[in-house]
Image (cartoon, rainbow, N blue to C red; front, side):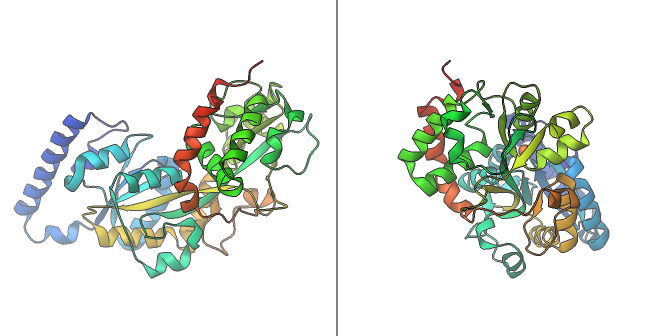
Length: 360
Ligand code: FE
């Protein structure tokens, strides 16, 4: 479909976008009229806006197309896709939104660009805590938010998120921005378990324990542990797999142990990557076929292995590398509960001036 293949990775300005979308829509419509009824069969396709990287998605979509004959068209971007869906409105060619994090799925729901899917296959495959109760989004892979600890300087095999505020870690922890979606979800989970007053104290304690201002990504935290700037960093599990694959980062990965927090009590905080059906999905039936494919054992294995994540479908094994990290005991708190506390978490991050870093 022209409107998808013509657009690059970054989102164009909204005014231009509207023109482009309308023009592309008109071209598609005209092509359909000129080609006559035979074109109907040729248009077995599904259009995807993806926050997830091509390297991860492509092998899956190729398998799907091979099996079903349905073509897939994807726009990849690291930001702006929800805004784009909103701007395109009814003219949007997109059927599905793929994201790397549940916060973006909830943002899409709040922006009114998704529609509910009531579907037995999806509901059977994906545990209720990893999908929206109304069917506006579905988790596809899981990841845990863990502590990366220096092999040389930290002799621990257990830790809790609560421990990260213990003064014994003063100036020893590295983390990315408190406002990043991964940390917001973690902080929201702390509010859910302990209430706001406790979480504010905890976050203040964690801030005091930082070795530097929150910055970079999860991998830079591990880099700084290897460099000796901090002893602990907080990051998602799949970054271990990513660093091990990257010759420039392999030494970072090898300098740390992964500790899964709270494994002796409620379990480790998990989040999901996922999918939403867009509000105006022009190829709804095909989009749902793709959603079914994504929770099939074959796709779950491929998807989770590609990025070192955990499958969402119970009984599907994780990759050998992921299994080598030990079993995952996941905090069963539903992501919808976390979603409801995201705003409160974000306000808390601002209130304690978390991103200002420690006061030396
Ligand atoms: Fe990530």
